[in-house]
Image 1 (cartoon, rainbow, N blue to C red):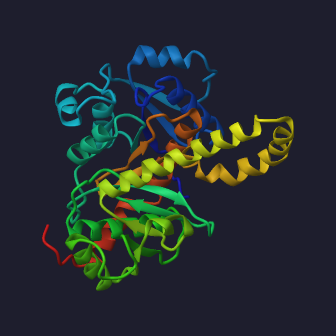
Image 2: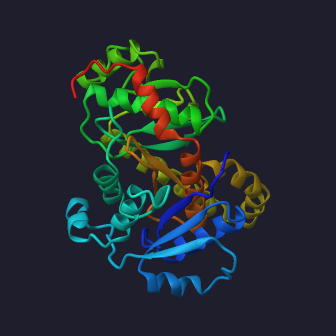
Image 3: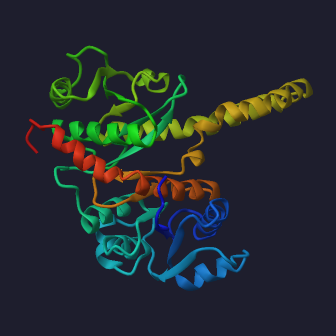
Length: 344
């Protein structure tokens, strides 16, 4: 990475189920581990942030605090909250980014509020009608794939899915390191004739594009690595994501319950535990931390609501990486190459 100047990352100190404790701890971890490679701007209730920071030795660490006394909770309606809570950490942090005072904004708070704030405060990239959010999945092949949309856009038109494919391809190439990433539509069958009108029209658009379109994939193909970029509407994508997030926890509990039934099983499980932890590590959302909201004029990273300190640390790294890789600029350039034939 070329870092001629130290970037500033605004972090929503009040965002998440365990804020500000986990947010502060994760940010401190990131600063120490990176040797102050960037500056953290904590945005939130100043007194609460200071009280939490007193638990740590922060001498020499690059951080500052911007007071934002209001909090948008997980149950708040995004559009209403943004209007009524203009001094909230999400609104203030996003405005800092819009005004050029920071290079990125990262939050594990109310996802809908972050997405709405990013869209209205940062604005959309020219040529993008629907910004999107994706989620990264590990695969059997060892490659990582990204699925988008996973909740930002429930109702989509064919050109929206096409835009998601373009943005996903850029992200896959620049962040996940996949050369000429394969793009696929998530569908109920591999045949080109499967699916509703929106998917059929999107299939046609993708087939005629310069993207590396591999056709349709089914749900069972997601973790097999048959595609690097998997495109669907946010309704389907969010269901897949929430199901996937539940699998690791259920599997761990099943294994633990199995092991506790007798001493022989406990011994066997003890011998296998280290290997299992390594094998399952990449399925843990903490390892990736967060994903960017693609298609807006800025870097807005969204983390899991129940983020641990480790997840917050990695969310901050994603923000840094997205800034340096100039993802937005590359999306703008890619849009010049593709002609969207469907109506917005």
